Amino acid sequence: MSKRRVSMRDFCLELPKRRQSIGSVLACDTSDRLTEIQNIPDPVDVCAGGQHSLVLTQSGDVYSFGCNGEGALGRSTSSSEPGSESLPALVDLPGKALCITAGGSHSACLLANGSVYAWGSFRLTIDGIALKPTQILAGTECCSIASGRNHLVVLSTRGKVYTMGCAEHRQLRSIPERSVLRPNQINIRSANPFNAIWATNTCCFLRESQTETIWAADLNNCQHFAPIKTTLKDVTQIAGGDQHTLMLQGNRLFSVVGLGESGTEIVSQLAPVRNLECSNIVSVACGDVWSYAITEDGLLYSWGTDSSKAGKDDKPTRVISRNTANKKILLVSATARHALFLAQFNPYVFNSLKDNLLTFP
Image 1 (cartoon, rainbow, N blue to C red):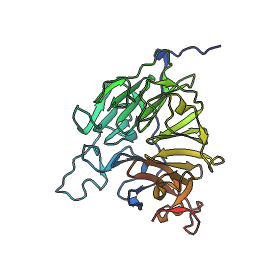
Image 2: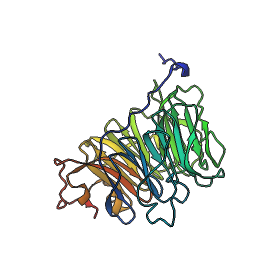
Image 3: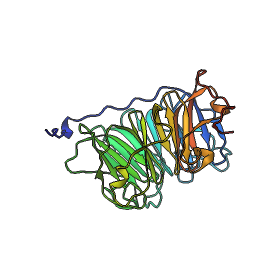
Image 4: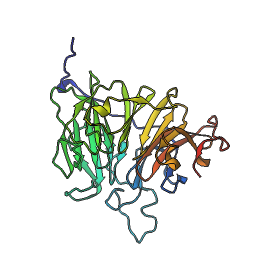
């Protein structure tokens, strides 16, 4: 017997809770050096953008640092003030944030009242640059945000999904090409309200309530097609790079690699990540051509085509450094140029540099 379609009128999602586990922020750039970022009080979440970074604190403040070329930092910086971009500084927001997200040159946060503020720009856009945080979807209570390289996806508490940004790959589907900070709703006929969203570099995934059906739009940067219904089940997290995607099903990690000739092929060929089949994976992240996975014990693994950042070839390799000694990794966020980690002191985590492990300086 088929399940009854959920009414939008009766559907309501709760606002997320802000992360509470405090750690230290570590960053790795193209020099392969893993360094600790100082002067951010009680960080609980990290997010890596194209050439900028966001950090959320336990009290709900947002700090930004990195390149501010298109307003991605959401605050004023000046060439006459050395370090005004590279040093973390507070973003001026009208309230406390629950979560953060960042893309190539844009940033966004979800506030405690369900409002969303975004700033920066999207590649090839024609609507200008938002140098300071600007509210989007005013009057709509939202509960989740996710960024691709050049697009932003927002989920409302009523189960509606909105997209905005640069739509040259049609991952936004609902809006004309080259539109920015102009949210439009994704409408899929006969679909239930949605209860989860994820974004990768050039696509987005939506999960229906009740049926748990997952829809995918633009699964690679070569194919262009409308949102399609997948056969994916029990997915708890999705992350992706340029042409690969990682999916967590419970605590089991699967990968999808390759473009395929049809729109549905890429989401139907799941394969367990080698050497991590028995690991209890709790979080994943992807750069353009490499991947990260964190185990329940706080161990960090990495793999991909760039051996200095992602292990050797496709074999996941344990990653440690002097800055991670006796620390468990809580979170990781990665892009093409850098990665951020949130690490927490734990004397029971064994990180010996004498082990045959991939190490950072």
